[in-house]
Figure (cartoon, rainbow, N blue to C red):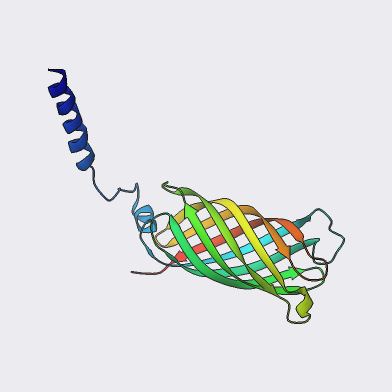
Length: 181
């Protein structure tokens, strides 16, 4: 008797699991569109004070404007390539980088983790060209179909050049626009 009851309970659990819809239903249409794959453009404005020794002109602070052209593969994963301009006290650097983002399952407010890395070119003095990594965490608010605002904070570490390693804590405010299907 106990075996039959266990089998019936197991069968009920399996049927219940397979009866669930494959596609989750969002609370609003704007969130439903946000979950779909497609081309993504992310433009971010960044401000970052230096950490540690900041007496060098490239380590005191920077502010920047960057843009990322990418693709959202699933509801959670985005990958893209970016370029921008960083204004430091003594120099202007031009980053070229890759960016990957993982968004957690959510509705309108979406927490995410981001990782970026690449090179920052200094066209006036090639010795100031640097390699960097920039992990961060943030939150994204879905405004409307194909539009979102994001805020994130992270740590950028650069290496290369005459005064090798520099680090910053950065704050990024971004706008994300998705392409039409």
